[in-house]
Image (cartoon, rainbow, N blue to C red; front, side, top):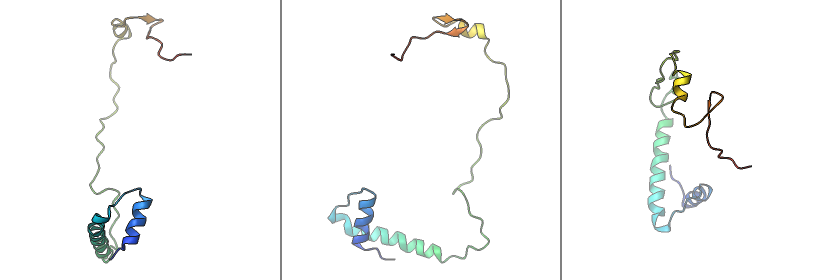
Length: 96
């Protein structure tokens, strides 16, 4: 499928790309080759083929959410520079 230089300029304008005039012939050939390949793919009989949401199969890599013992509250606060009512006290970072 052939693409014209005017179509390339319009696509470049819409996508905010700058294609120098000396690269226009190279860009025209590359885009025409891509469109020709897509045309070939459109000729395939895909009846009965289930669409894939991704090119590769995805697997959940997260571990099971299992409850485990946590760090003891007093032990966690033992290294705090300042503590206030059982909570960490930190310097104010938001000015009023």
